[in-house]
Length: 135
Image 1: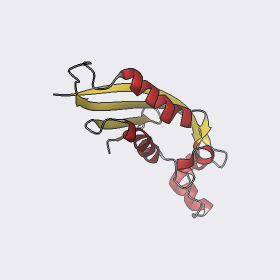
Image 2: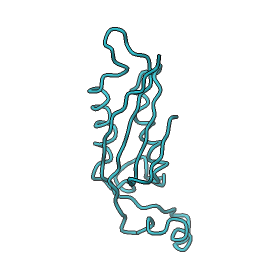
Image 3: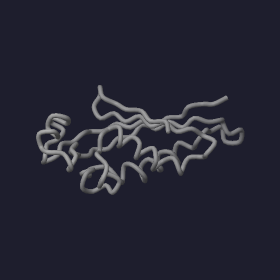
Image 4: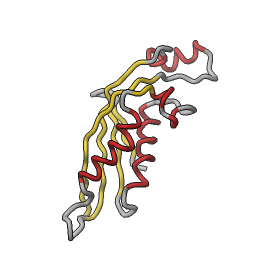
């Protein structure tokens, strides 16, 4: 029997959506206000879920304290109050769209989750706009 265990977290970050190889007009057409050269910010909400069998000894799929610390170390400390384009190495060459951010987060967390367990990350850029990645 597989059980899904989830932990919510959040971080605040700024970004700019643009491609340096495109002209300003094309960036403006494709990315609109999100192409602001002075960047813009979001209060990102994150839900990290681990699916797996319940350990008969502990009763856990994953220890929530371990999951909490992992999210803090790998995501919150790396992204919170940062300019994603300028301060987060993963986005030096990668446009920090919500889609790309959720994949980067998943890739940062996956090596720390037992290989027998599945991982899902849901990232809310706004209360109405969110993306999900499960690998």
